[in-house]
Structures are given as C-alpha cells and as structure tokens.
Amino acid sequence: MHLQHTLLTLLTLYHSTAALLAFPGAEGFGANAVGGRGGEVYVVTNLDDSGTGSLRDAVSSTDRIVVFAIGGVINIEDRIVVSKRVSVLGQTAPGDGITVYGNGWSFSNANDAIVRYLRIRMGRGGDSGKDGITIAEGSNMIFDHVSVSWGRDETFSISGTGENITVQNTIIAQGLERHSCGGLMQTDGGVSLFRNLYIDNKTRNPKVKGVNEFTNNLVYNWGGGGGYIAGDSSGQSYANIIGNYFISGPSTTVTAFTRGNANFHGYVENNYYDPDQDGTLNGSELGPSSSNYGGMEIIESKYAYPAVENLMTPDEVVSYVTENVGASLVRDSVDTRLIEEVLSYGAEGALISDEETMGGPGDLDGGTAFTDTDGDGIPDDAEAELGTDPNVNDSMGLHSSGYTYLEVWANSLVSESYSV
Ligand SMILES: *[C@@H]1O[C@H](CO)[C@@H](O)[C@H](O)[C@H]1NC(C)=O
Ligand SMILES: *[C@@H]1O[C@H](CO)[C@@H](O)[C@H](O)[C@H]1NC(C)=O
Ligand SMILES: *[C@@H]1O[C@H](CO)[C@@H](O)[C@H](O)[C@H]1NC(C)=O
Ligand SMILES: CC(=O)N[C@H]1CO[C@H](CO)[C@@H](O)[C@@H]1O
Image (tube, rainbow, N blue to C red; front, side, top):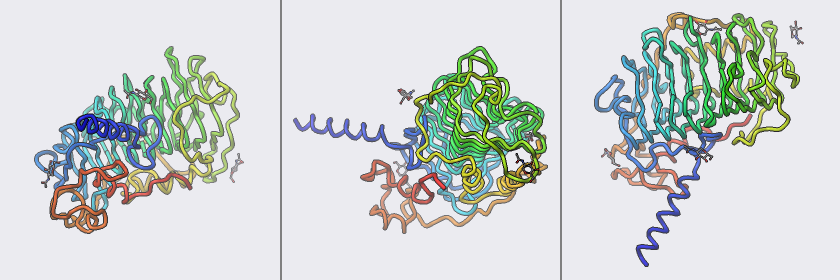
C-alpha cells in the first residue's frame, strides 16, 4: 500500500516534469526539453579550454545544469561536444556574459539540451568543413537567445534524424566565405524557428527541408546563394512560413525565396519583403503565389505544428528582433554591429571571409562572482528569497513549479514572455 502510494507519487511527478516547458517562454517543437533537471549542478569557475571548472568539462557528462560564476571569452581549440540532458544557462554569468570562440559545437545526440544566452563564435581557426552548431541526430532541444556566427561550413545546421528542436530569439550570422551559409534546417522530425535573425550569409538563410515552422523571423542581407531556400530536392517538405520580414542589403542579388518545387508544400501568411536597399523600411506583403515563394506549392491550411503564443506582424518583428534577439542581456561588439546593419534597412552589411573584419569576438567584462557559500550555483541573497538554505547544497531540489530551485533563480534573471 505504502509502496503503491510512493510509486503513484513518483509517476505523477514524472508526468508533470514531462509536460513542463523547458523554461517559461519556451515554444515550438523543442518546448518540453528537460535539460539537466534531475541531475547535478555544475558551476563554471574559469575561462579555460578544459579541466575542472571549465565549460568543456561541464558539458562533457550527462544530467547537468551548467551555470557560470565568471564572464568572458572562452577560447577553444577543439570542438565542444555536448552530452545528453545538459542545460547551459548563460544568463547566470556575471559581467558581459559568455562568448565561446575558436571552434564550433556538436549537439548531435545531445537529447534534451537547453541552451540560453550564449555566444558561439567559430571563426577561421575552427575545423574546416564544420559548422558553428551541428545537430545531425538527437531530439528535444531548445536554443534561446543564442548568438552563433562565423561557421566555416554551415553556421547553425540541423539535419539527419534530428527531432523536436526549437531555435528561438537567436542570431545566426556571417557564415564565413566562401561557403557563407546560415544553415540547413532539414529534418522530418520537426524544427521550429521563431523570432530569429539571419544576417550576412550568402546562402541558406535557412535552407529548409522536411517538417518546419518559420515564424516571425527577420532575414537581412542574404547573398546571391539565396534567402529562404525551399527544399530544392526530391524529398517532401511541409512548412509553415508566417509573419517574417526579409530585408535586402548590399550583398543581396536574389529574391527572398528561391529554389522551391512541387515537393515543397508551404502554408504562407503575411510575409514582408523590402527589396530596395534604400535605408527606409517600407517592404510590402508577398502575395501568396507560388512565384513569390520560389516556386513552392502553396497550400491552403496551416500545418498543426506547435505555434508561437504571440504572433507578431512583420513590423513588430523588426522592433522585437533588433531589441531582443541574441545573447541580449548584454550585447557584445559583434551583435551590436549586426543590429546596426539591420537598422540601416538595406544600406549596410557585408559578407565576410574573416572575423578580423568584425574585430574578432571583442572584449567582455568578466564581472564579479556572487557570494555562493554552499557552492550550489544560487547566490546567497537569492537563496534567502527562494527559501533554500545558503549553507546547504540544495539547488537541485524541486520547487512547487516543477523546476529546480536553480532554474527558478536562473529563469528569474530574464524576461519570459515574447511579445512587443
Ligand atoms: C516529438 O514530439 C512528438 C509530439 O509531442 C512526440 O510524439 C514524439 O514522441 C517526440 N519525439 C521524441 C523523440 O521525443
Ligand atoms: C521605399 O522608400 C524609398 C525611399 O523613400 C523609395 O524610393 C521607394 O520607392 C519606397 N518603396 C516602396 C515599395 O514604397
Ligand atoms: C552539490 O551536489 C551535487 C550533487 O547534486 C554535486 O555534484 C556537487 O558537486 C555539489 N556541490 C558542492 C559545492 O558540494
Ligand atoms: C551575404 C553575406 O554577407 N554573406 C556573408 C556571410 O558571412 C560570410 C562571413 O562572414 C561572408 O564571407 C559572406 O560574404
């Protein structure tokens, strides 16, 4: 009887955990990623490339919520490979937050990843033929307020058997020449792209195949390879494309949508295109004809994919994205410049082949670590407010909301609803 009751309690707990959003404001196919909830806390305490207290070490084992007691640029030599059930909560870093520079990251098979407020800048020194962020397989992942740039192959790419993945409020920028790619988003397992900025990539902004929702994104200064590339293959694609703004820049020589065919089935609604590169934001709606959408098959009803809670108009998207997207608690020099390009409404922007053009990753203020007597990741003064004990390692306990106390604290540092 007693055992049965315990089991029932456990099952109920499991159930409520499974239905919980990754964090308040998580949306789309990856909204229910669990991350390291139920595992251990790992506090990153240095900017080293490896070893105890480093970010690489933090993500190398499963079941961890990773928080930061230091801000700054982490220079990496080899690619970082992320284990299953890991949360990387960059918003907890003091100072100007965290940039990881020098190579890219693999989230292949890193099921249940939650990644927030992190800058990932690959650069010329990274592995040739590799991406800024790669996901070739794996499920239930969400990337929120990430800035990823300077991929040598793609910048952010999801392919293969990836399933239930969201990329939201994220900057995907400046894939390095000559490939200069935003990235592939091609999987049948479902990818949501919400409120992102694709900027200064020659091609694949993104290239979509399979099951995909592309809503409230801003695409700026794509190059001759293409803005949104619709499938371009014999595989079948089923996509919603809603409320996006496409703004041509100095590098743009082709229309917003290209390379579609009858295998690409798209539901389209209220997408704006400003082609004239004249410094004024005055685009107009792309009528729902196949020719405006690169030749894809336009379908009448929306696919029943997990949608955004607050659908914005394209004009609202421009305001929202320029104010909020990327690791925006503190904008670094790179993101600041990218946003200035957008706000030139067509006059500024360039494809680059070398990050030196951007001044590299820039300098970041490391900030001051908060006092955390028990080393459980939550600052002493916040423990007092949360009702946890500043002298006991108790941050992974479950709050009544279903989140760990550590997540409740981390979530409280950033805004949770995405509307204007
Ligand atoms: C992806 O999400 C769908 C819908 O919630 C679910 O049925 C499916 O099992 C999920 N896939 C994985 C691998 O979790
Ligand atoms: C947008 O504004 C520019 C400059 O004011 C003007 O030259 C252009 O014709 C306008 N475009 C549209 C579509 O109204
Ligand atoms: C706190 O406990 C976790 C286990 O949940 C452990 O991994 C971690 O090292 C502990 N931290 C400290 C500072 O004792
Ligand atoms: C269109 C465009 O600006 N493409 C650029 C994308 O970024 C790479 C690297 O930053 C440039 O080399 C491309 O020219």
